[in-house]
Length: 589
Image (cartoon, rainbow, N blue to C red; front, side, top):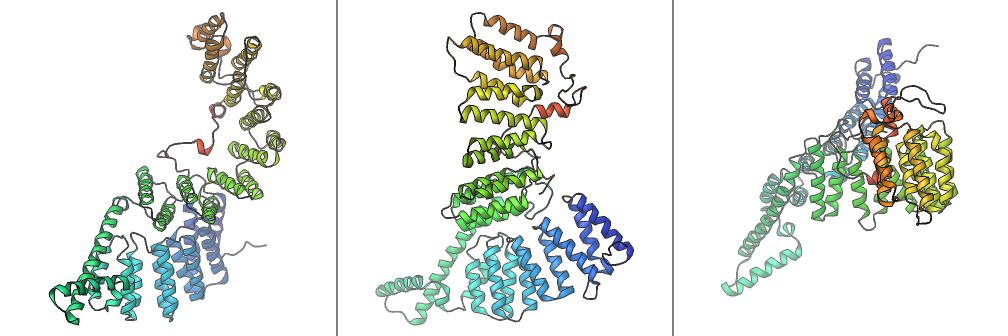
C-alpha cells in the first residue's frame, strides 16, 4: 500500500508528511507549525480553485489544527480567510473570519479586515452596518482603533450618508484614543452643516434655548438667525468641553499605552517591564470605575499575556467581585483552562474546580481534577486538592482512598507518595482527631521515604505539636528523640537539610527540655555544626549512601536529592509578582 498523498508532487507530499511528524512530536513548537502551514499553502504552486482536493484538504487541516492550538494569531486568520476566498469563495471566507473574530474578539486588525471584506463582497448596506456595529462593540474602545473607525467612516462616505457619518463621529469624539484630535476636527467642521437637533440632546438644546431667551429679556428680542447663531456658539463650546475631557482621558492612558511594546499575541516571553506596565494599567482602569472599559482592557491584556496565569487569576477575581456575573466568571475560567494557561501550572484549573463545586457542580469539579492528572500523573497539589474535594463532599474515608490509590500507583514517584502519606496522616490527626492512627501511618511508612524532607519535617512537627504535661513529658521526649535519631542516622537527606530540621529539635530541647537537656543540646550542635574532623561517621559520608527498598543502590544523584528537598505549596500561597523568567512557556496545553 503506497503512502498517503497530501497533494502536489511526491517531493511536496513527502515534505508535508515529514513536517506533520515533527509537529506531532512536539505540538508546542511554534516554528514547526509555521513550516507546516507555509509548506501546505504553497502546494502545487499555490492554492486556487483548480488545486487538487488533496492539496486543499491538507492546507485546511494544517490551518485548522494550527489555529486551534494558537487561536490568537490574527494574521493567520486573515491569511486563512484569503485562502478560502481564492479556493471556495465568499461564504467560505466569511466563515473563517467569523471563527477568527470569535477567537480573538479584541483584534482591531482582524475586525478591520473582516469589515473591508464585507464592504467589497456584499451589496446590502444594512448587513455591512450590522457587521461594523459588531466590530464597534468588540474593538471600538481600543486606544489604537483608528483603522477600524476610518474604515467605517469610509464606507459611509461611499454612500454619502452624511447623517450616519456625523452619528459615528458623535460617538468617536468621546473615546480616548491615539488619534482623537483629527476625529474632533472633522466632527466640528461637519457640525456647522448639520441641523441643531442632531448636535445635542433635546434636553441640552432646550436648556441652551432657555438661556438665550433669558438673555433676550435684558437685551431685547432676537431674530431666528441670531438665536440659531448663538445656539451654535453654545453647542460648539459644549463640544469643546467634550474634546477637553477626551483629551484628558487620552493623556491619562498614554502613560500606559506608550509602554506597550507588543500589543499582539506571540509565544515568546514578555519582558518584566511589560508585565509591570499591564499591572499598573489595570490598576488605573479599575480605579476609574468604568465596568465596560475594565472588561475591554482585561480582554486586550489577555491577548498579549495569554500564557500568564497571574492575569487570568486577576481577571476572574475582579469579575467575581462584580454583582451578577457568575456566567462571565465561568467563561473566563473555561477560556484560561481549555485554551491558554499551560497545564504545567494548574492553579487556574484548580480554582475553576472550586468555582464549580461552589456552584453545586461537584461532578464537574472532580472531572477537572482528573483532566489535570491525565497530563500530570502524581501531581501533588492536584491530588491533595482532589482528596479534599472528596472529603468535603463524601467524607474522610473517600479522601483517604484517593491517597491510598496514588501511593499504590506505579505512575507516581517516591517523593509524591511521601507527600500523600503525610496528607493521610494529617487527615487522621486534624480532621478525625486520632493522634494514634496518624502516628501509626508515619511509623509504618518512614522506611520508604528516607530522602523526603517533607515527610521528616511533618513527622517531627506532628510530634512536637502534641499537647503534653509534666507527667507525660518524658514519654513525649522519647518519641521526639526517636524521630530525631532516625532522621539523622537512617534518612538519606543532605547534611544541610538535616541541620535545618535539627534546629526544631534544638529549640525543643531549649524550650521544653529537662535540667539535663543542655548536655544533649551541645552534643547535637557539636556533631552537626562542628568541623568535619569531629562529625560522626554517618554524617561525613552523607550524600553517598545507596537507596533502599527496591531503588537503585549507589551514589545519590543531584536530581534525586533536589526532589527530596521539595517544599510543597499551593498556588494561592505563592505570593509576589512573577520573576523575569516565569513565563512557563515550555508546555502550552
